[in-house]
Image (cartoon, rainbow, N blue to C red; front, side, top):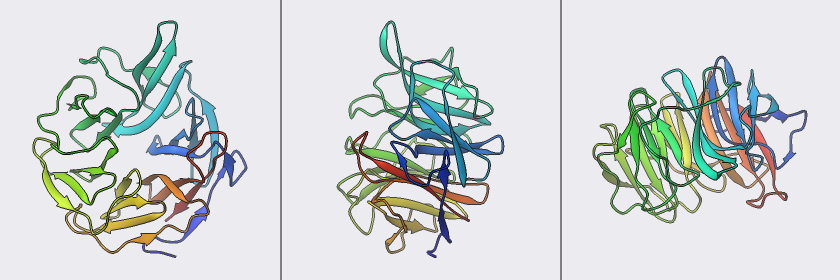
Length: 272
């Protein structure tokens, strides 16, 4: 048992260790957990309890997903769509976590792939994957505008963690991170107690902000990312954390043994 509770390994399609399986992003809608397939990103997973998962294919042929975001009662999947015109970035929307439709009439032309969507209750930030690509925000899920401010020194290996109403913009290979309490209008610079050596990520729940920073190591904040407790480690079989969420009273964690498609095994774990 650690500070986040007692962890147990979940099953995906009846197996606790799945080749090119698991999930790279997890969320909760319509009384079920939904995850995007890790390496098998043309699929998504669902679970009623977080412990037993089933894999499905997106009903939009050619769609590959990278990130899930729940905003104002809708689940958004950011990714890319491959068709006769080539590959283009795309956003799908679902109200039930099973049936997906493209986000039509959006006010911007998406740039690049593997961008992420990061919402609090009132605003969703679209963070690009490319260092010089613009960041946007939306307050209604359809109309996007340029984000008023972005951290000036942020590097390309960055990610955003939402701590309740606070946005934390994190980087790899540094202790530096940025914190916004006004929906991304301005950012203040802070430092973690140790260097992030892995693509960062995390989740907020039970009044705790949990940030994974290196392999299976994580930090915990009780004040939405101002100060941090000493690092601990998830009790994982595999060496790299890929996603963490807190919903319906459960932490749900996904890990992987390798970054190489076809050679990686992954697991989903729960604690609550």
